[in-house]
Length: 185
Image 1: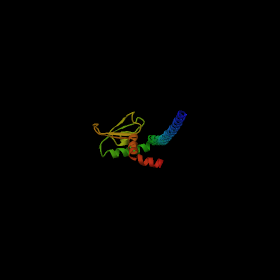
Image 2: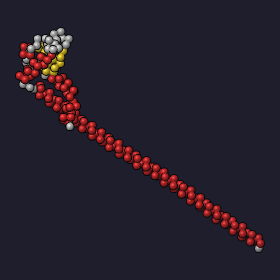
Image 3: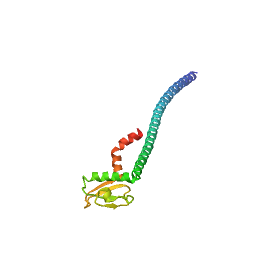
Image 4: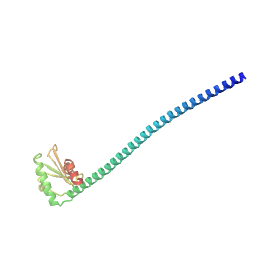
């Protein structure tokens, strides 16, 4: 009997130790699970924050890209309108009546005489003005000229290009900002 009671006592002690170890193990497993869940929650929070920041960055980039594309289209249309205005003015200059054109050509010759005292004129094949009409030494025709004059010195060393396209382009270039402000506000 004494042996039985010692065996029972050892078994009871072993069972109590197993229960204690199982409780400690369960508590350790719970602590590990809690710590893991906390780390997972923290990682998920950080990942969600990165995803939100990436979404915001992409949305901002899309807005910026759309705004740039919109500005590009507007600028392209403005450039097209300016080109149409330039061509319209040039066409009006080229199509003006002969008497008005002659008056302009004479004014061009008069202003060029400060640089070239006795110029010869090169003009469009469409114009039929004589050297006497213009006040120059001679007149040559050139198919490359649509309207206006090129005035040259007798020896060809000096030349003043007064073609309407060239004059208009010079005026256009020097006043483009003002023209743009007038046309587009």
